[in-house]
Amino acid sequence: LALPLAACSPARAPLAGRAAGAADTGVVLPATAAQLVRLASAPGARASVINVWATWCGPCREEFPALLAVAKRHPDVRLVLVSADFETQAPQARAFLAAHGVRDTTYLKHESDQAFIDGLAPDWSGALPATIVYDARGRRVAFWEGAADSTRFEAAIAAAFRPSSNQEAPR
Image (cartoon, rainbow, N blue to C red):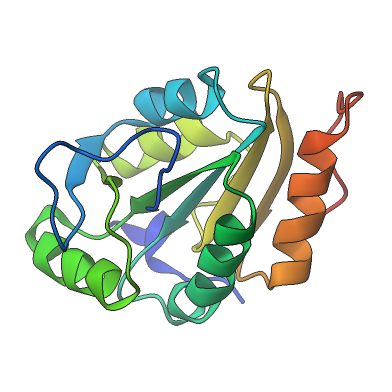
């Protein structure tokens, strides 16, 4: 990715369904920001978490196990994992996902950096990792750049579960 996504700052998609024929490794599909937002806003989940990461991003690799553990504790949360790796790095992304036991469909950024950034979160600088949390109605309730721990993921999901989640959770 170009400069905005190149600087790292300090899926499993259980409700989106598993791709037919997927065996021990998940499917990595190209996706635009608009497609990902539609997926995160689709009915059927109490909350959705979009996490944008890359294999070359140290903070992304560090937070990944905590993110997966939180997602496992919340089967009613749709986890949308999005690799910001170059298309030529898709094999490395697949290997990274397989090493972490991710066998469900995940996504690979498939548009220009700026269109992707602006389409997901206009206030996003492009730093990785980046996480956006939506409530069941598809409203954004949390956004942050940089690595998070399980406490931060849990707090954002709790905010999405609140019936009156009409504003973004604290950063």
